[in-house]
Length: 500
Image (cartoon, rainbow, N blue to C red):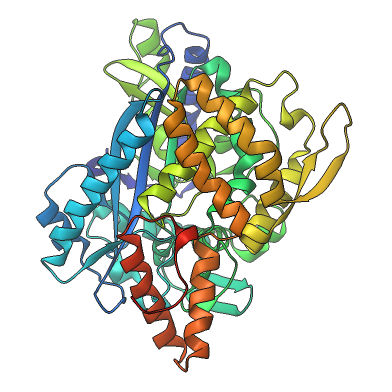
């Protein structure tokens, strides 16, 4: 699809044509959702991790093309910035020893990629935002050498009509005006896919939205934005502002940003795609003239490429995905909440917690989203991003009470959500040894109140106290992070000194 992309049509007649094509896709999706041709559930999950490149000095390296050439595997691909890569793990069934299997595949693949990167004086780093990355490192010339990124950058700039303003106030305040979408490349994530049937999609998506704040609280790993200490998980505010094509006056009128938590619980996947069409003008087009209804009438399955492309330029933290594999359509929930890293063990622990918890919550007789107002879920997400593992969240009281209680994220996880995640993994058929090992990592993080973000900030401040200036402290902390990341010891066990 990438080779065929063309610019969105910003003249009124062109925009109308694109909206007609998207409406046709939406109508086709509506018919498909009532169709029996959707893939039967296979308990399939998928995993993608966005990665950074840094040198032995801890500073960013803008050379993904050279590194990818040496890796020579389709499992590794470009991302937006030249300092980024992405690794894709083939789908697996959620059962048996799948967690240990994923862990071994990731360690093997990342170790190989790191060896190849070192051939050109670079290293692979799994981290939400590389602490040594400076704003001046990310401009239009630092975008990957791929026409789709150049075109997306041009169209988003044209839609906004002025520079993108980055303004994040946390422990410190950082402001910056960018003439490109390149600051988005600072944000590297883990994306967890879960294939579901149309009838189960809403329950899975609602469950994923409800627990997004908890995922952030225990998994935060992005406390620095361009050398400034910001939120404990700074990716969401940075990503929102780096992709915000709304001119300020339009934003003030209530237009939705393209990076969006959402505003309501849903009853079907169709509602999310319909919101896409209603709220977000298309930026790109495939140029395809597929008539989905005609394809359906002929007994075929439409690709809905225009709908998929449009959906890919709307950055929900839990995104609906329509795809066709071997002529069979399916739906996925794409969870985009978590930052990358710190270690493979931490990534798999986060995945185990998510997949188990979503399964358990989606099957409850009185689902949490019928008791938790959506506005409270959104407020929880904001609180978790700001405060990380120290966040206090709103959650429904146990029993039949409809009221909410304020509770620390770590207490909520240890007393209520970890047992649910364990029962969910049991329902998937995951082996108890895998279940206990990886959920045990989450429990220890909560006991010690340590995650990637808290380790980074504690180590950084210790370096400052030892006499290093800001830049030297960030570089030293990043080098220590990289060394400990390669041990694969979970982050709650890491020492905060710079020796070793």
